[in-house]
Length: 246
Image (tube, rainbow, N blue to C red; front, side):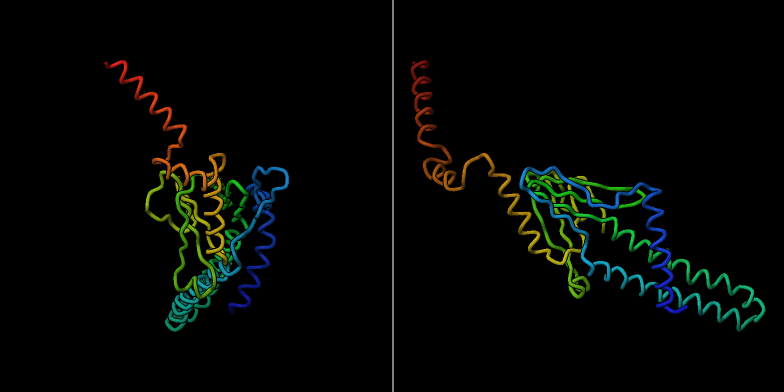
């Protein structure tokens, strides 16, 4: 069966299977939500289609290697014993076709069940169908956001974002995995812009309710972060302590 026919068969099976699996495993078809205030909006997105093409690239590469291997084995059996080769033909066809169909379905299921939702205060990551993983990371807990992009990912035009939160270690997770202190956003075409947006919200969340940066800079210049009022209180405490020790 040609690669085009295999893809068509896979797409046909996937359209029916998608509805069955999402109903069977009770997987939400819509994006997750986050609490919002009046006037706020959510940015819900799936990975870029470039990420889907990237995964299909590796799928077709692996498919070609495995199909050539099974085809070569079948031809060798036919050359050795024609009758046995004919009898085993359905088995070899199943070995060539069925794994391709299941792998194609798995790729699309991974894509269709992965969501990233951004609010003004947090980001929520959801992925999975057999085991549903949903993680919410508030901006005030984020320590660092880095962009990861290999040469093949650069060719396809996407990158991954690695979000490290308080208490997180330096090790990177496996592709698609989420650690206790790590959030992985895969396959975004605007990774640099998204990183800058997240970091700007991180800075805004940390300064919320604590005064503006100008006030902090003036306080620091007045004496290591103390305002004149603070310094006056400290002088009074020092004087009282001196009197008590006299």
